[in-house]
Amino acid sequence: MATLFPNPSLSPPHPPGVGPLAPLRRWIDRIEVNNRRFAHLTCRLIPCCCPFERDLTVLGRTVHVPALCKLNPVYAELMRLRFRALAYLADGCGEDVTRYVC
Image (tube, rainbow, N blue to C red; front, side, top):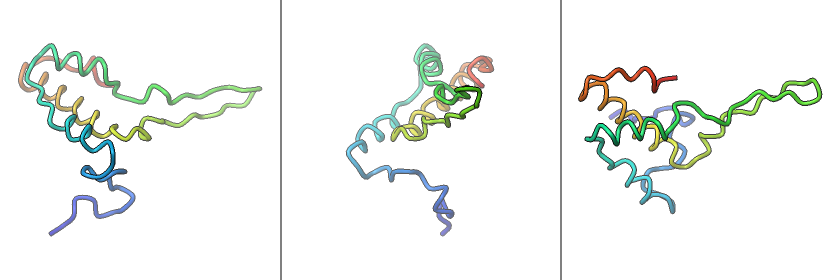
């Protein structure tokens, strides 16, 4: 049987059933998107790209601040929730979701 993440560098940062945030992560994964208003709210609240990634100019030099969102231990669960909301709006409601895509 093939593993889901054959390359160790591609594996999720935290196993889903381990750690103090495991109950929160499981709760987020169990949220069902079955309401149009909730789906729109989810897509508005969870950004599609990291808002912290920037290029700063300090004393004439450009310093790149990398995306820090992936350090969030529930980042993957939030992205999956956002994707479920987008899929619900696109497939279930037939709405145009291009305004929520970066």
